[in-house]
Image (cartoon, rainbow, N blue to C red):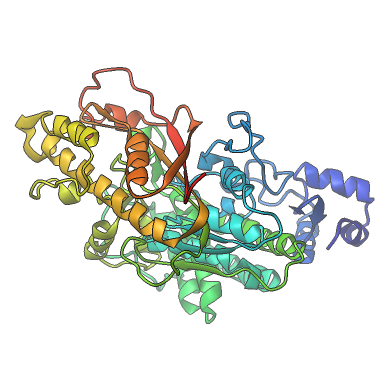
Length: 517
């Protein structure tokens, strides 16, 4: 409903309702400059006596945002001209429509993506590619602007979340809201019945140092999985899975610090009990509200036909034929960094508890196809050679291999293998991507420097050098984050040892162009 329709429905003035929406005191979503309201959400709000949606739930402590998205106006990311980019940090997405569904440490901000997409010609549908799609920031913003999008993501949990977001234009928000209400009511009623036993069981091959969920919490999660297993509509079931996956770490005995670790290690108390149904209700309402607002925003573009949106749960480097040569207008992406952050292992809870994997062999298959692999997968193998002649990079890898030689594969030799493997995949990425780009196409890659065994590796500079040798023109190196969280990278004895000099971790947006100036 519009502001006027909703004001008439709940019998307040439009001015009062607008103020309530801006302050987050009523369920609302902004589409462009106008507010939109779901009738079912307003009915639920009235039935509860009018409290703000999700009040009291840990997932809804912040007030509702007053704008649908940002355009480079962050305090840390003011534009610096036509090619300036906003801060790339994913934390900017925490309150953003669609992006707030799933917390994702490895992503970047919607504002950053929009600054890149601003450089496309207005009024023309382009093809936007993200080879490392994650939970879909680039792809969602591309669709929001009416562009066709395609992405690749090897992590099936992230791919699931990304796929559900891209289906938003096809989904019925009211139907999802109804099924979500039935879901959370089932969990709440089942939990209240002390004699009821869940049908689902904890995944047998999921191992953690302490119980991932406390007994009272686990029982509620299993009831949630019971409902999902009985849901006849696979789309609804996947929608509910995304909500469970997005919230589960929050009521577990673990947290991201930034890697997944026990709450006790971070000085936090275990979660002995939690209103899981309430947390899920807040998350699911948020997701349904976002879908409705997203649909309105895309419809207002007035373009014929809905944008094409595809995400493939496979490796970009190993895929063939999905995207036609010379068809891509713009790439906005961020590959895994050279920091051995284990993206697969940090989503183990979601992968196991949502039934996506059943054994560690499933995880190993993902590790072997991951961009750059992981230190653990290449440290003990034969020496890895660079596949491209790059003397400066070869010198850094040779220096790295000499560090801590007495520690064998745990010293520099193992990390040199990791670095060489990583940069060989950078070569493969650049070679494949330039074949897919249109003449004049734009590629923006966000990447940061790294520290291995105390040796700084300026990954951004080496990546740019590789891109140049593969035929790209390096049009700019934009420092989008002057400081990023990296204590675990610098201070870890496994990753770094003793850092020999003061080193600042940063992120760079590498701007690549295809063809002459």
